[in-house]
Amino acid sequence: MFVYTVKRGLLFLPMLVGVTVVAFALIQLVPGDPVGILLGDSATPEQIALMRYELGLDQPLLVQFTTYVTNLLHGDLGNSIFMKEPVLSLILERLPATLELAFGAILVSVLIGVPLGVVAAMRQGGLVDFLVLVFAQLGVALTVFWLAILLMYVFAVELNWLPAINRGVPLVVAMKALLLEGRLGPLADSLSHLILPSIAMGLQGAAMICRLVRASMLEVLGSHFVRTARAKGVRERRVVWRHALSNALLPVVTVIGLQFGNLLSGAVLVEGIFGWPGLGQLTVGAISQRDFPLVQGIALSFAVLVGLINLLTDLAYALIDPRIRV
Image 1 (cartoon, rainbow, N blue to C red):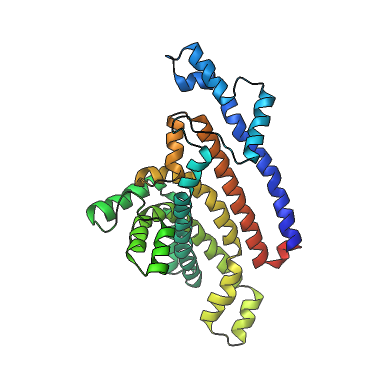
Image 2 (image 1 turned 180 degrees about the vertical axis):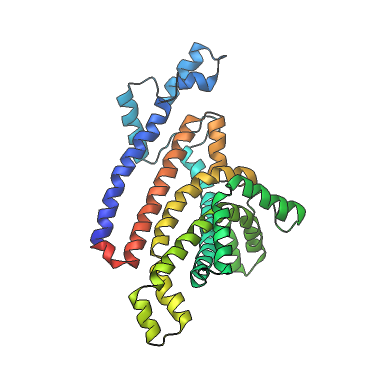
């Protein structure tokens, strides 16, 4: 396992190099002069020259890239032009909210998708199977934007069951309050704000996982070791939920890793709708204000996060299925 981990880690390094080059090229690929675009038509040549000097754009391209990489190695992503704060600080401040939302969406996907997929496989060809497949088709077809608006209107506006906007108490703070002080209120507040955006982001993934689990379960249930277990008199519930499901879940691990990248991109939309103060909102603000250093830093952070999650997914898959390590 150690050798496999080292191999996968080494494959992560070229990705980091590629991401660094792409992040650096963001400013270089902007049509025209990025400083002129940033300052607008009313800027004087002196103002443009000063901004180019502050951003280091007056240097040769190779010098700019060398400086950029050197700063990255020291944990310096530059400073936000409009917020006048270090980019890394801004990202670290918003990152927990986005991760909280992403993992909440993954939890929704798994808790809904896996049981429905198993039940559909056990009732293949029946009414339950048909209804689950209809749900899966609808879940894939529905857009995140439409679903978020629908959930907000029904559960926040009409029924007034859940809050519509804002994050509430951060989940980590709420857990500390529960474990150290025995207070349940902060956790209830945190979860109530998390439910709607998590469902909006996670329902499409639940539909995909449902279809995948159903197909995997049908294949596993027809395998030799399942027939042997049944012939030995093992209870059907144990055969399905312990023996068959553990093998059917192998492809789901990969899907969850791939879904994480989609969730990060979907967070840009969902955070804007629900007023969730994460990287998605920060990204929209940085793009609208043409805050190039902040856009660079966020793009680099997203890419590194997705790469790390894919690396962890590969390692998890190897732990579940030892054949992968060979």
